[in-house]
Amino acid sequence: MLAAGVVGVWKGHIVVDSSKMDKTLTPQQQQMMKQSIAATKSMVITLTMKADKTYSASVSGTPGADNADTGTWKQAGNKITMTGSKPGPGGKPDVQTLVLSKDGKSMTMTLPGQMGVSAKVIFSH
Image 1 (cartoon, helix red, strand yellow):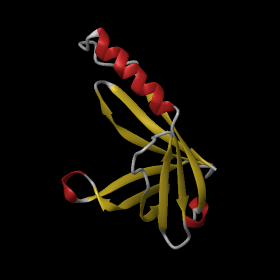
Image 2 (cartoon, one colour):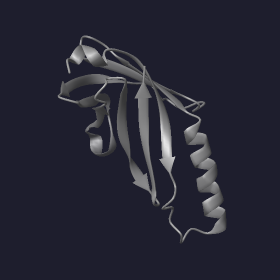
Image 3 (cartoon, rainbow, N blue to C red):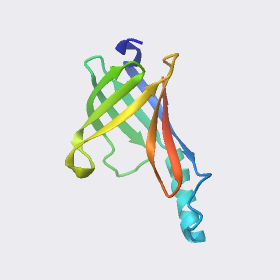
C-alpha cells in the first residue's frame, strides 16, 4: 500500500476490553475504573496525516487537558510509525505504531494495558 493511502483526516474511537480487570480491586476501585472506562470510550481522537509525513492529533472529551500532539510519521508495509514532537516518559519522543487494514479504510493502535484492562484505538476516515 502506498503512503498516500494514509494521508487525510482520521477519527479514532477507543475500544476497551475490561473482561480481565484486576479482580483484587476493591468495589470502590472497580467503580472508579468503570467510570474511567466510560469516559475514555466517549473520547474522539482526530488524527490528521499530512503528505509531508507530519501529523497532528487532538482528543475531544478531555476538558482542560493539553491534548494536542504533532510529529512525523513513516510507513513500512501496513505499519505506520508516528513519532511525537514532545518528550514522552523518560524524556524521549513518544512513538506509536498503527496497523493499516488491508482495505486501507482503518488503522488500529494498541494502547498499553493497566490493571488488566486492555484498549486500542480504531481510526477510520
